Image (cartoon, rainbow over all chains, first blue to last red; front, side):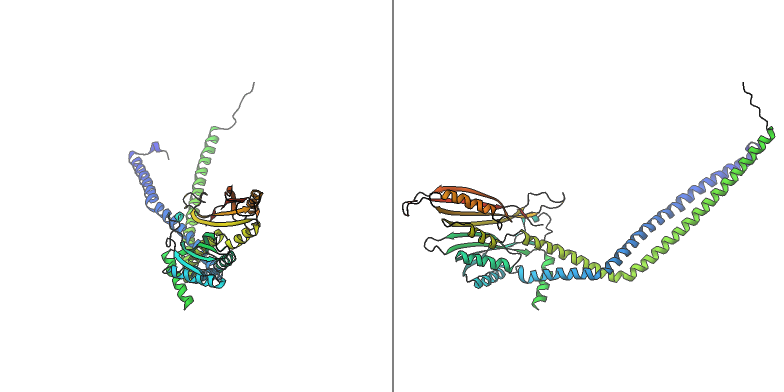
Length: 210
Length: 216
């Protein structure tokens, strides 16, 4: 069959057929195959993500005991900290005074005064994002005692609370009583500033006290 | 001189061309058709596999979803707790045990030196160290300064004061926090010798500063 030998009518049929075929291929490609491909790609991506989630979920569920142990351990640390070592968020001075007097009586030092230094403050370096849960709370303690008693008091305080820090201390000798010193001490604790954490710790405290 | 002689007859040449072209076209059509069919079958099975796999994975996930949500909530709580615990630990690691330091300083003071005043100042401020990442906030750090003032008796008391300052710098208990110790003043007391046994007396001041104690 030679195209030269075809009649004009046949040629027109052929041309029309060609156009229909090309248009059909274009239409099928664009409106059927491409959307199918996109849908299939999406389905495949979702499937991969879901499969990965399932694997991760299985791994996590399998690791439940370990996660539970870690949670329990960290809960214990925080509960103990909230119950024993961190100032009461709503009445920190009362808490600090009680702690200071308890420790000073153990070592036989009489405290003259305990006063708040500035109130609870956010650490300057933390105010940019505020993601830290603890700020600083300080009290000033004034007393008179010997250097030996001071060492014993400082030791007792630092031993009793791992988060306590002595951030200010002035020891002045007295002319008339060489063994007695005027002591001015600033004690600092971390205090919980994160409201969610405060509520959480407060609940823990209640549980502990209950 | 070479001569090329074509021994094929023209009809043979024509016949061979005609057969080859048709065969090639037929072959190409068959191969193309088969490849297309294979591709369609492959895609169909792939599609079924994905759809089937997706539905299976959904069922699998649904089966463990309750457990997963519970464990995931535990994991999130644990991570948050760990963040708090780490932060609290930084308060412990950045503090200085002054009980040990007071013992150490007392043991270093020679008999002819008397400390008249001791003052300590600690503060929390932004560390000068660059944050681990650019977008992270600056890490807070504690910085302590201890100032000692005292008097030393004896004609060679200046040597004793210098030895005392050196002793502070070398002490094992203090070296855990001490970054720098400086004698900032040493002078002969004006009234020395007048009231006592004729020995001269010197007053001195020294500063001991800690390095930055990061609260990570």
